[in-house]
Image (cartoon, rainbow, N blue to C red; front, side, top):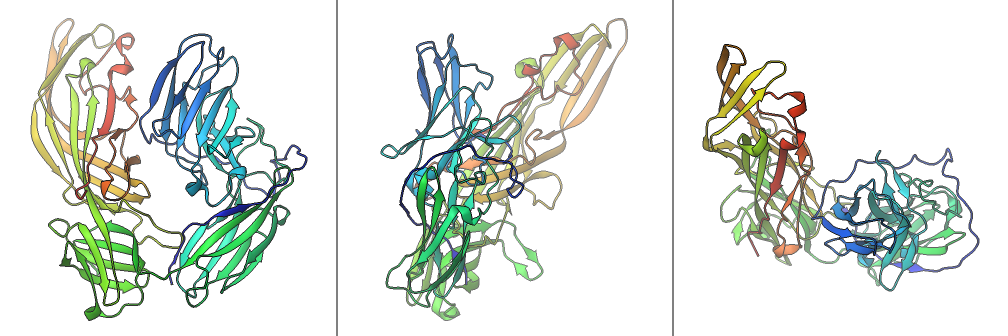
Length: 572
């Protein structure tokens, strides 16, 4: 049977005792946590703060920096940029504070607002704040101050970098949704050095890769439901009852002990399925036509459906039109659906004679723009507009225990690139090596359409799409060979010269295979894909045939930009 994890709550018992410094170098512990830096995940907020101090708050209101009077010697621009959270057990977004080389005359305060619903696998008293150095290593920022009333964590700092918050201890899974009779393994995870008296010291205490702590941290496991539980140390095995229990969900708990902070009870709520429902939907745009797999697109539906009642007793419809059911299991259904048309997306209804569940499979059309400036002033700029179609579910995500049948898929078949560029020309005089005038002229390109290709095919536009809880991760490739006719002229300072007509390729350089985060603004049928852009790249190269004297070359004149508009959902 498929297992699916939901959430549950936490009950807290607190007592205090003495504290002491921890030893993060135990040979039995994992190494320090090192990750890549997060990519932007929202609009930056920038303010000028002076000697009188001030504050900057992120656009989502969940992060702020407060600078007291006298912390700055003069006016300074301060920026807060949401980024993808690279902490494996972190919550919500991380935030980039810049400039990184700023010097404060006294500490400033960093604050996170935590969401009770998002930290259900731990308790607020076991939350820490971390920052990431330039090499990607994460450090505890110090002992955070907790304000339970306002759901705030805060810590003082004297430097800027990427910041996030995370649990010292947590139970995995925090909640589960399982079938009657199913089995589930639970475990306690930790990110702090192996010492119950742990006190985080800024710059000295690395965040550890999540590991299962030893028994010195843990008390007994507890369960009083209709199934069974065998718990020992950092792990437990749960057996669900064969029918819905009297109390549903059932609670499994374990005590976590920190000598200085106290004792806390982590609780995992396990719900036994009783309702026919859809959790999440995923579209495979791979278009399989080989090995007995013959479908234009495949819709995977995850949820609770019971045993297959037989072809005559069940159906899956999109916009009231039957689609072919490839197979039906209690936790997953696969259907063959068209790539376009009135039932390529819309309201999906899964029905048996006993029950019906519905959910919206939505569509978004994203306009993405690529601009590569290859001459000062931009007269020579390679331009590509990408029209990208996505189908998916903006409400819910895979539950723990549900196994995605598609880890990544192609771009939708109707996705395409359009090259539309005016003629351009630029001349540059060189006095050093190769003295002379270099002129490059580009012919215009009028609405040249470049079709989508599968990832197994060369050239054109191709992409890999991954479902995320808040949108899609996209990786793209684009190349159109010999579509740009360039005219390269050289006039020597003394005599002679050359003229060459050379076809050139247009491709999306600088962003091939880079994760492009497309994120929903909301959930459900009102979820648009938010407008965004990748970090601007500078010094990305001049047009072929142009040359500059070294003192005249200005990298900032040559930029590569990739950005996209907001995409409204088809069904609102």
